[in-house]
Length: 247
Ligand code: G3P
Ligand code: MG
Image (cartoon, rainbow, N blue to C red; front, side, top):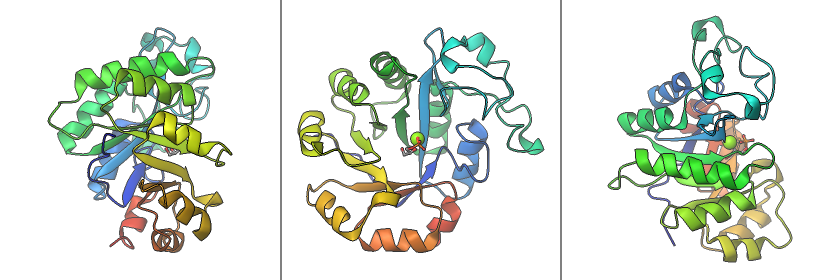
C-alpha cells in the first residue's frame, strides 16, 4: 500500500481559507507563510475538461460569476475574479488550474492533499484527468500527493490509474460497509469530519492501523482533544491557531 509520506499534524484547508480566498494561489502562499507544510485543495473540471481549483459545483459563492462550473470553459474561467468576494486585497486573484497549484506547492516545498471534487456525473473523468495532470506535474522524487475523494468512483479510478499514489478514504458519516470500502480501495489514510468523531470511533478507526485525519478544525481546544484521541492530522482554515497547539 502506498504511504502518505510524512504527515504534518496541521493541513491548510483549501489553502488557509480563513485568511485568504479558498482554492487560490494566494491562499496557498498564505498557508506557507503561516508555517503550514501540507495543503488541501479541491479539484474539478471545466466544461472543456481542464482541472481547476474549486469547491462548489457553482461559481456563485467564490467568484464574480454565476452558473455551474461544468458549463464554463477554461477561457471563461480565466476571466473570473476569485478573490474580490473575500476582500479587496485579493481583487483580481484568478481561479488557478490544478497544474499551477501543484507547481506552486512544489516551489514552496509543500506536500499536497488533492481532493477530487467532481461535478455530478463526472467522478471517473475528473479523477482520470486530474491524476494525469498531477502525474505530468509532480516529480517522481517527491512524495506524491495524497488523493482523496468522497466519491467512491473517483477513488476506484485513482487506484486504477495511479496505484502507487496514496489515497485518502474521505467520508462524512461512516458507511456501514466501510471495511469493504477500505479492503477494495486500499487507502493510505482515513479522512473524516471531526463533528462526528468520538473517542470510541477514533479508536475503532485507528485500529485499522491507518492514519486518521479530521476536517475542518478551527478551534485549538477541539484540535487538542482530537490529537488526544489519536487523530494524526487536522485540516484547518486557521492553521496558524492549530499549529500553536500541535506538538
Ligand atoms: O478533504 C477534507 C475536506 O476538505 C472535505 O470537505 O467539503 O471542505 O471539501 P470539503
Ligand atoms: Mg476539500
